[in-house]
Length: 277
Image: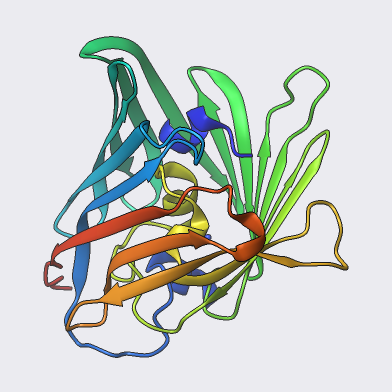
């Protein structure tokens, strides 16, 4: 699984598609929209129906339709209510590349941690330094995004996202002491982040939502560490607005995975700014 601290705190003809985010090869609507809020609701487990979780990401943009702030709220209710907050401020250089992300974390209103992630570029490679230490490396290509975490003990953790010809993630592979693999089928309508001018690799690794939730995924399959047997894991029921952007994504377990909780994600939008060049 992905590291939670990276998920909460953290893919160019093809890279241009990635910069715009994808699921957009059909120009269904001329209207350009930016997600202003994404809300995810689910029960913590099917065995604990009384424990509900709400995750909310709110987004702020600059005049170039680039993300400048992500406000993340995680609220769980069990015997007591717990609220965890993360606020990420994103900085760009004059070439439009992300160079820094400042992350403030708090729990129940008490600030617990402030982190600074710095990004440096060497061709198609991005190095991430977190709080003065090497944290991860991202390797970009037209077909893959490969995220390699700095060595922790003797374990090396590598996440690879395979992309289709539109830049959508169609396979996710996590390798460490064990291997997890997922494959996805997606639709060809407008993606949530279609008109956001922030690199796709950042959207996948920085927001609290998984790649299969951000790519208009219809079905998700798992194989464990085997390539020869893929089993349907979850499927999504997607509702669209009149401009054919997704506004509701209901994730349900496939019949063989009934122990998994269902979830509902709702998306709100604002009009994108007109960029004058």
